[in-house]
Length: 405
Image 1 (spheres, rainbow, N blue to C red):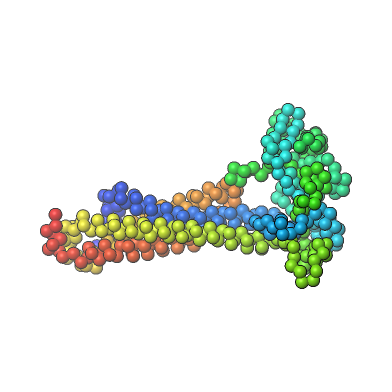
Image 2: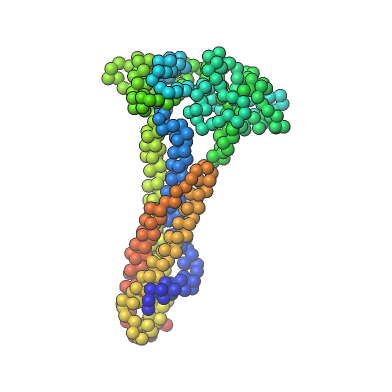
C-alpha cells in the first residue's frame, strides 16, 4: 500500500466515524486557532502602532510626567503649562518643532437645540497639534500661535461633533458653539478617522492649550505633554538637550533621577512588545494545552479504530501485509487527522486576525512562522499519540484477528 492510498483510507475512516472525528478535529482546530489567531492579532496591533508612530515621526519624542501605560502622579510633580512654555522657549533653538497638549474628558458641546453626550474629549493644543498627530483639518484652519498667545475662545471640532451639531450639512466654520457653557467660535473641522473597536476617534474638540488651561484644566493639578521633533542636530543630541533643560526647570540636582519620562518610538515599541509578548505566550500555551488534549482524543479514536478493524487487519496480514505496512497505515491516518484539524485552525486563526486588522484599519502580515510551527507540532502530535495504536495494530496475531467478531 502506498502513501496516497493510506491517506485515502484515513479520510474514509474519518467519514465512517463523523461525530468523534468532528470532535477531535474541533479540539485540534481550537488549539491551532489560538496559536495562529493570537499571533495574527498581535501582528495587527503592532502594524497599527507602527503606522501611528510613523505619523508621529521617527525623529520625534515626548516628555511627560508618567511612563507610557503607567501613572505616577503621586510620586512626581506635574509638568505645568508655565514650565512647558518656558521649556519651549529655551528649547526652541535646538529643535525643529515643539508642541504642547492637555487632555481632559467629560465635556458637553451645544449649538441651538443640538447637544452631545457628556463624554466629549477636550484637547488643549498649540499650533503644532496637527503636525504631531495623524489628524488633518478638512475645513477651516487649525489653532495658530496668536490663538495660543491670546488664549482665544476658538475651537476645531472633531468630525462626529460637527455631524451631531450640524445635521443639515451646513458649514460649522465661523459659527458659535458652547462647551460646558463657555462660548467658542468654530474655526475648523477635523477630517473623520472612524472607529476602532466600536470607539469613535472623532469625538473630541481642540482648543488653544492656554484656553483649555483657563477654562477646563487646573493648571497646577494637571500635567502637560511636550512633543519635540529634532532637526539637524539629530534625535539623540536633541533628546539630551531637552533632558538637560527640563532637569534645570524642575530643579533636579546632579545625580538625582529624572522625575519625568522621555518617550521615543523605540521605548513605546519596547513597552508594547513586552505586553503583547505575554499575550502571544498565553495564546501559545493555551494552544499547546488544547493540542495535547486533542492528542489524547486522537489516541482514543485510533485505539477504537484498531479494535473495530481487527478482522480487516487480520485479512491484510493473511494476504501478505507486513507489520511495517500496518504500522505506517495507522500512523498516517493519525497524522492526516491532525493535519486536517491544523489547517482548519489555521484558516480560522487567519480569519480572526484579518477581522481584527479590518477593525483597526491595519495591514496584517500572514504569520508564516507560526503556521509552519503549527503544522510541525500537529505532525509531531499525530506521530506521538498515533504510534501506540499503530504499534498495537501491527502486533496483532493474524489468526486471532481473523477469528475476531
